[in-house]
Length: 307
Ligand SMILES: Cc1cc2nc3c(=O)[nH]c(=O)nc-3n(C[C@H](O)[C@H](O)[C@H](O)COP(=O)(O)OP(=O)(O)OC[C@H]3O[C@@H](n4cnc5c(N)ncnc54)[C@H](O)[C@@H]3O)c2cc1C
Image 1 (spheres, rainbow, N blue to C red):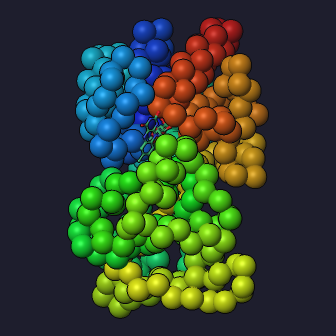
Image 2 (cartoon, rainbow, N blue to C red):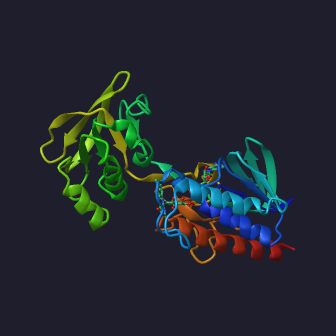
Image 3 (cartoon, rainbow, N blue to C red):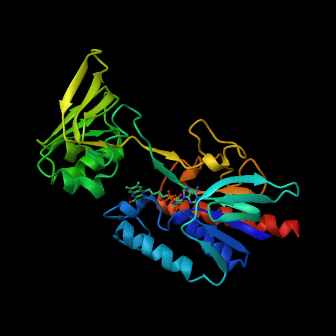
C-alpha cells in the first residue's frame, strides 16, 4: 500500500513529488509528461527566482528536481491515469495504462487543456491551419491571413506572437470589448495588421486539405459573414483534466475539482487536488506549486493520523 499517488507532471505535480519524497512518503508519481502546459511558451517571466526562461527550460528544471528524488519515488512517466475508485477500507484504487496501484491518498494535479470551439471543420483541419498555440505555430503562417478566436489574454498574446509573421490578423471577440491586460491590448489595437471583430460567434472553419476560411455570426446584426483566412488560432480558454475523478469527487459547473483552499482537500477525505485542475481562481505556475505543497502536507497529516 502506497501512502500517496500523485497524478500529473506539471509544476503542481512536481512540487507534490518533491515534498512527498522529503516527507518519506511511499509515493507513486504518474504523469503523461513532465513540465506541464507552459512547456510550449517562449518566455516565462514570472517564475520566481528566474527573470526569464522558456517553457522547455522550466520543464527541464522541474524534471531534474523531481528525478533527484528518484530513489524515494516510483516515477511512472509516461503513464496515464484512467480512473480512481475507493476501496472498502477507505484507500484508493488507481487504474492507469501502466497497471493499477493502491494508495492511502491521492493528489490530483492534472491541470488543463485548451478548450475547443466544437464547430464544423475544427477537428478535421486541426494541424492543417487550425492551431491552438501561436507561440509554437506562428512561424508557419508567414505572409498569410489568419483569424484568432478569443478576446481574452490568450487571444491577445496569440496576436502578439503572430504580428512578426502573419500578413493580416482578424481578432474575433465574443463581447463588445477585449479582456486582457491593457499593455497587450494597446500593442494589438495600434497595429495596422490587426482588425478586431467584436460581438462575433464562430460558426465554421472552412477548407478541404487546408483552412481556407472562417464563417461567423455578427451578433449585432445576426448576419453570417465569411473571412478568407489560411489559419485559425483557437484561444478561448482551457478545460480541466478532471474526467478520471468525476465519479468520485465534487466538480463545479466548469468541471473543476472543488477544494478547500486551506488544505486542498476535495469532497472525499484522502483525495487532494491542486493547480489548474481545481477551482483555484488564478491559473499560474507559482500558484500551482504553492497549492500542491499545501495539498501534500495535508496528505502527509492525513496518512499520519491513519496510523
Ligand atoms: C501557452 C501557455 C503559457 C503560459 N505561460 C505562463 C506564464 O508565463 N506564467 C505562469 O505563471 N503561468 C503560465 N501559464 C499557465 C501555467 O502553465 C499553468 O497555470 C500551470 O501549468 C498549471 O500547472 P499544473 O501543474 O496545475 O497543471 P499542468 O501544467 O496542466 O500539468 C498537468 C500535468 O498532468 C498531466 N496529466 C493530465 N491528465 C493526466 C492523466 N489522466 N494521467 C496522467 N497525467 C495527466 C499532463 O500531461 C501534465 O503533465 C501558461 C499556460 C499556457 C498554456
